[in-house]
Length: 549
Image 1 (cartoon, rainbow, N blue to C red):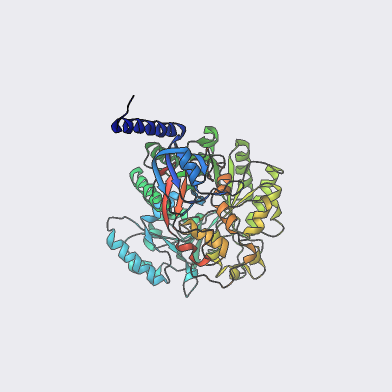
Image 2: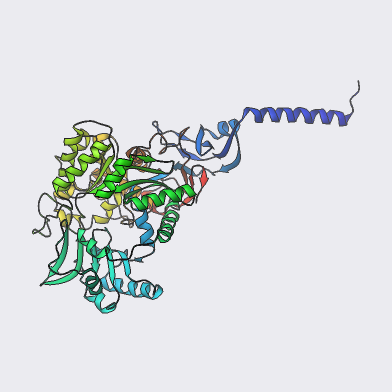
């Protein structure tokens, strides 16, 4: 039988098609392949790979580019161009809804004087004449030439007829004007447990510290559900552009938690949220009865408590008086009896307890109550939020009772200019002691506390590793004996934070079976010069294999 050329060509084509289809049949189907990358898996061996495949929102294969491309076929393929890829970044302690609120307020961050605040407020008021109140946040008197709390006098001159409330950067003090004082019916005789209404020469200065801020906030009109939806979406937009795929909202009420759940189920809110329930009788009773609640994007299994205030506003509760104001030692926001009663109820419920502790006295009190309840090693994963000033003799209690330090490295580099004044030369060495704390359980969670600090998690990575501010000050770093290594710092914003949230089996590393949350950066934070870390940009952010930025 003779075959002409056209017949041979058809036979060859059929053979090639058969080989090709057989090759495809051998390949596994995926939705997405990322290859030609530097993939920091952050698994237990800290393996660095080149590629991975994603199907149904989860990683299904990780390896070399050759193996992944040979083993999988996908509708979408991304050539990363040798760019670094990391697990989606966590912020284990933030105020997600608070960020959304702040984005709609007057931004007072990095104001260098009270006068600059007034100018910003005037501009904001002119742009928002419909606002019943003028609300601002972010001032810090420690950034000014005169490092003392302001008084209401300049506010009264600029805004005699409209109420004003300006929250300090740490969220633990506020300045209000006379109109706000009038509406809130605050007097020099007003007293608040766990707070301070500042009075000078028998007159209100306008400064409210910690629980006293509630006197003014209770008369501010509440945001509508629609307004809160706008805030949450604005916060999400800000977070994903910096590579955050999971945030941890440190203290929300039932209504706000249910709104987040609703928006996530509708698909408008894609970012994952580990919500801590604000302590309160209503919240405590409702959520203990309801039990732990979890979806792919929402995890409600912890309560947020406050033991004390902040160091910058001298509300942190110290064992000995402030070095720069010997008449003060700070104060507790709840009594020891109230704290122990609440923690006992949380312990019996199976929920996690996450307690804000700044001062060494507050840390000691809470560690002792934790120890009384937890007794020894355990897997309850109770946390101390901030763990900022911890007496040397109390540090081992973190290991003894399996307590997780949930720190914010940027607090160290924001506070270092004046922390020594507050604490003195010796006591400041017990502050921001991240390496000492890490050694207790072999892990530490590092967040930002945004909007107290900036949203960008690379600022926290830089502060943890270099112990420098954005201008690379001080030379040699601040208390470098407690700096983290780059590997530790990356784990602290991925797998260790996932562990702190009971999520290490589903997120926090790039491994088969885990949710495909990952981020692609323009440069490698594991190798870039320290002074370049804060300026590295995010190229893409993916949540569940879907590109969200």
